[in-house]
Image (cartoon, rainbow, N blue to C red; front, top):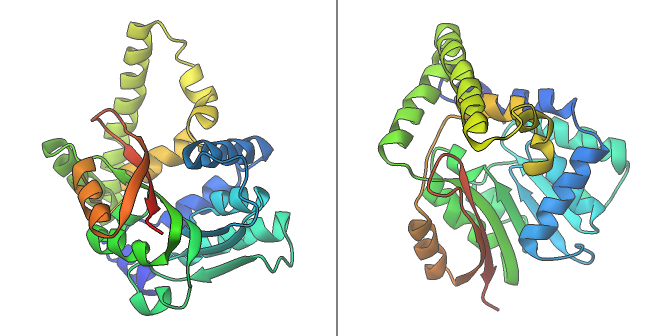
Length: 276
């Protein structure tokens, strides 16, 4: 599947796989532990023993690894070949020759591919479906993969209306060409750094901890690569929580847990349970 490479070359898509490959160099036991903790907290479980876990858009493979370490049998797939390579690298490093961790290249928009996967106790897709270019179709497609009584854990960018439309322009500019990327970086990296510094001063927080504690606060992730992902993450779609609720209610899901970004910038996290 080389379609993504052509889209990246045309400036129509951010190279998520390349960003994950760079992030992978930072993955250590502390990040893995934080990823495991975030899964357990949102899913309200202590482990995943005996569960089938699908990572739809595995990225670096960190959360596939976390699920496997928590005892699940894991199936990972991603649209980007570099992301597939990252996930395989983590499997080979921590679970070599493991029959309970399968990895494919595939798309959440490819109904024929999804039909081959079967059903899972947990379907996980964090920060993925809004980057497909067809978010509502992707949100619908994952419903078919959840076993009766199973859980669906997704995160979707919050709809800030006019602000979201502005960020879409920024991301499109970043991906358009080298000049656009440079303009976005020199404009918005200082914007985020200075904005964070100002917020910490007002709140009386230590500004250094914004960076040193990031992986503890944010799922084991990296502030550097998350910032690059944010600035370049295109295609880019957003949703209000009520729109997501309505869609999944129509498909027989009930909300189990919600973690919002407070109406601001970022993702709302949802855990839904499929009716038995």
